[in-house]
Image (cartoon, rainbow, N blue to C red; front, side, top):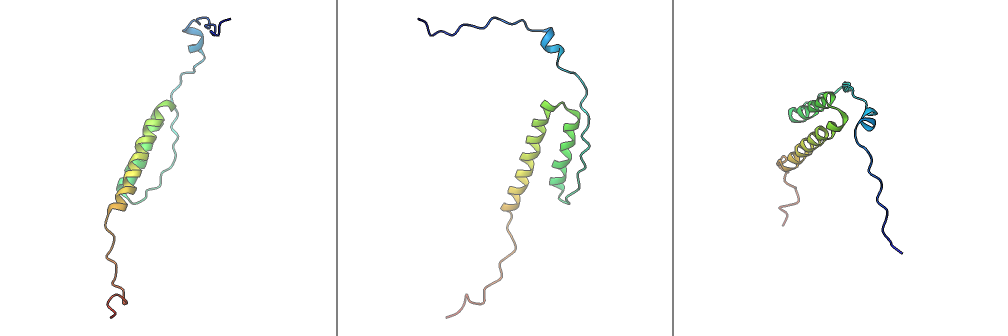
Length: 94
């Protein structure tokens, strides 16, 4: 007795499978983007419009780029020094 799995028969490639894939121009999503007032963030959000001109398989690259840029902008906020902390009235007590 053999445990071998029978090989599936080779299928023809070409015409039939490709004929079912519709080819059409992507429609712009025209999602409104409200400016945030932060130039770096607004530039990243404006980049989302690039996805309007791509087929859906190209959206991932744009979304990942925007996400990376927004994450970097948030990280930069954490790295900035904040305002000085006012002295506590209890620090110099003897």
